[in-house]
Length: 303
Image 1 (cartoon, rainbow, N blue to C red):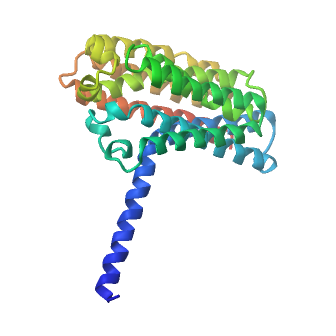
Image 2: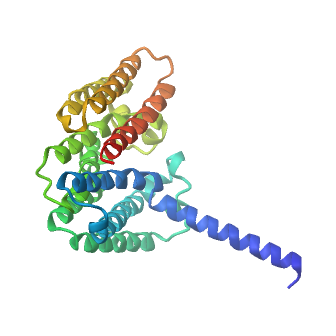
Image 3: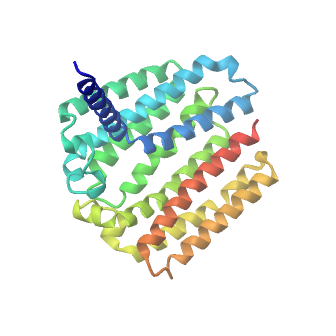
C-alpha cells in the first residue's frame, strides 16, 4: 500500500469511527442522558452526606447506581427513538438520527433499547429494591404512557414525561437509604415542576417541527399565549420550594430565590416579547442553567 493510499484509508476509518460514535450519541440522546443522570448523582451524593456515609465506603454501590442508571435511561431513550422513527423523518431537528438515516435497522435499535434497559435494571437490583422500583417507574412511564400513548395524542404528555424525569434523584438517594426524607421529596417536586416550562420552551422553539409531525404539544394544540400562561404558573410554583430546604443554609435559599425571581420575570416578559421564538430559546437556556446551578449548589454545599 502506498503512503497516499494508507493516508486515505486511515482518514476513511477515522471518519467512519466518528460517524459511528455520532450515531450512538444521537441514538441515546447524549445531552438528555446527561441531564437525567446528573440528578441521580445528586441524590446519591446528598444521601451519603445526610446519612453520614462516605463515597469511599460505598464505591461499589456508587458504580452500580450510576452505570445501572445510565444504561436504563439510555435504554429508555433508545426505545423512544425506535418508536418515534416515523415522525423523526418529518421533523427537521431529528432527520439526522440513525433511525432516520438508516445507519441502524429499526430491529437493531429495538434490541439495543431492550438490552440496555435490561442490563441497567439488573445492575440497579444489586443496589436496593427501592432504588430499582423508582428506576422502573421512570423507565416505564417514559416508554409506555409517554412515548407510546400520550405523546402524539394529548397535551398531558408533558406531565407524564415529567414524572419519568422527576424520579431520578430518588434512584440515587434510595441506593443509600430510604427516600422517606424531605430532601429527595423536594428534589422530585422541583424537577417535576421545572420540566413543564422547560419542555414548553422547547415545544415553542420547535413549533414548526411538532406541528408538521402532529405531536400534541401544548403550543401546537392551544397556541403560544396559553403556553406562556402555563409556563408562568409552573415557574411561580417553584418559588416556595427552596424554603423547604433550610438545611442547605441561608445563602442557598437566597440564591435559589433570586434565580426563581429571575425565572418569573423572564416568564412575564414573554407576554410582551416581540419575537416568541427568541424568547422561547432564552427560556430554554435559562431553565437549563437554572437546574444545573441549583443542583450544583446542593452538591457544593456538602463538600
